[in-house]
Image 1 (cartoon, rainbow, N blue to C red):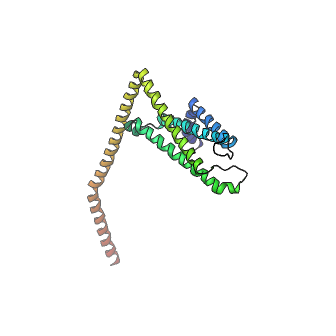
Image 2 (cartoon, one colour):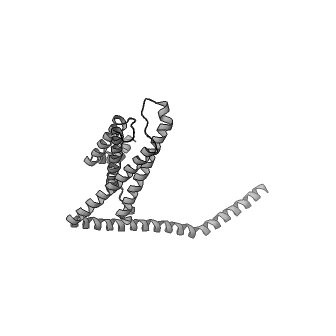
Image 3 (spheres, rainbow, N blue to C red):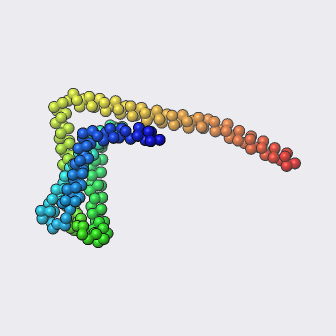
Amino acid sequence: MLKKLLHKIRPFFCELIKLPNIGIIFFIIFIVYMWGFYFWKEAELGSLSWWLDELGHAIGGFFFTIVLLYLIRTYFAGGFFRIGGKKTLRFLVISVMVTLAFIWEVLEFLWDQWGHPSFPWIAKAQEGQVDTMVDWMITVGFSFMAMFVDWFYERRSRRLHPDVYEDEEIKEVCDSIHNLSESILKEQRSLRKKKIRETFRPLKTRIDRFYSEHCDEKDLEHRG
């Protein structure tokens, strides 16, 4: 059992120890430590501490957008994104970042309402509506900025290395064809099974009816 479990999780750890993923983990730890502990303090709007907090939102919005793009392209860019294209991918990442920024502000609100009264020695997370909206807008704004940087870098790289992108586009087309063929085959198997069931359904009904009538006659004879 343990051997099977280790065999299943081994690919995960093999990917985890790759240099980009290690860098992502350490950067997340750095952000959590700096803005989750070191810089977390109550600050008035416009003060240095407040601007440091906004810097954390800016770095988070920019960095996590790049991370999402990297992770999806590396591990999850399957048939849906191949068919939908890069616009679909970017729209998804922006949608996720907008949602995460909203959830983060909701968590800060919940902390101030229920967490802070129980632990008053820990600083509040929000300084009012202005602080909340500025946090959200900076996070989302820098997320869009990261998306623009990614788009600009890809466009520039495409001009400098057209052969590489042509190979990638060919691979994308091949992957799309493969995924579509798999979907078609899966649908055909499903239809074939359904057709077989429908073909044998009348026969099964007759057998069940015959068996039921035969059993009823035997029961009557046995009782008689």
